[in-house]
Picture 1 (cartoon, rainbow, N blue to C red):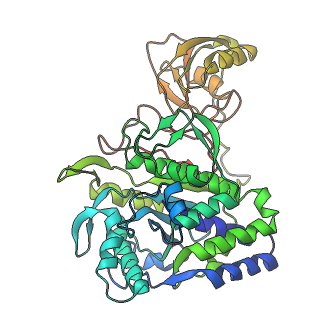
Picture 2 (picture 1 turned 120 degrees about the vertical axis):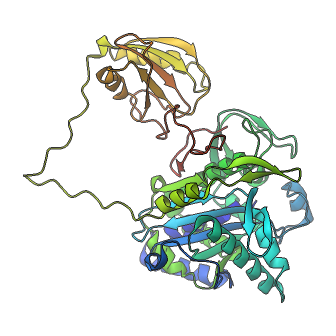
Picture 3 (picture 1 turned 180 degrees about the vertical axis):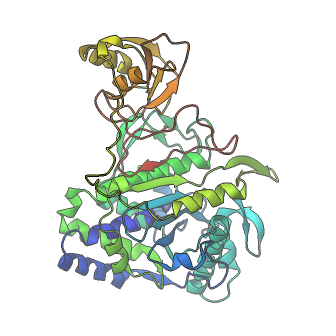
Length: 479
């Protein structure tokens, strides 16, 4: 799994942080060693926004090619890279959108099992597009790889309706080496998992992954979650890449010139870029991006299907994709102007009541033993009439449930659990609340780890996978 290609933008964003002279030098190191390919097609790669896209906003396709190039036989066995045949399938595909102002970066995963139309080839799994292009191109190895990239870009453009401006790919060895250079990556699992196919085992709780563990983790799709699918693998990849980006943007790396150069040299020697990508320009554009402004999503509305006895992921109706990618690439909302003396006053804070007027039953859906009892004790100390109601079904979302009309009562508790979702249950009495702790709960007085949708929200496509949006700053656990 060549996941490290997703790190390209994060790596480049640190190059200029340490000072223009050193940053300039590091960019030149990368430029000197990076491979180039003629990846951008001249047809079949257009944007539904037409000429509007010609500004500074950028769409980049990041690809992990499942290649064993550079690996010794011992490494192939150690890292459980699987069948060495068919080495030109793409194991990881992700679109990165960077707005013109460089204020953020949006990463969208494309599971490899998506069943899509591939130009000139009919319908097949998405990860075969590169292989079709490679095999259908005459010439040497470089020409064939460029052909694979071009057909994959045409396929992604057809799915998204977006023009792909740039392309980057990396191989397995680059991923492994980069993980080791940054000292491993921290992840947190809500529950232990066992993969019957690869033999991978991961304990529940926080842990640091390096080498073969990291590679097994980002490739794992068996013994994970309820469905054990390609979607579960994508979720693991997103969590891992968020941890990698936190390491790359940490003060430990920013203050260590030796490790900075090692990272840049590794990326330069492992990554292949399109001919037109200016590394220095990209580094400058992404210089100010922080982990909390780097989001991870998965293409929405995918559902299970079967074609000729093979499990695939079916695309949603075209309008679902059109709406999603239109929102993704829309210009950021302008910052609100400072209020003038004649401007309306800001909305008042929500009304609250005295904590002593609020009865709270705390339920534990976080999977953390004793969380409900500890939270009830803390709330009692703050004046609430709180008690534990025991365990609830596991949930990623901390939720405050209240009776209709008890908005002020709910707001009083919400002030102590910022970001908690709200729900209504009219079987509750006046002044009574239920606080259900989710895996995003970090403690009383601390904002929940993610702003998750309410439990009543349904996906746009019935039966579709739902993979909540995360940021690179999110350290909450996953299954």
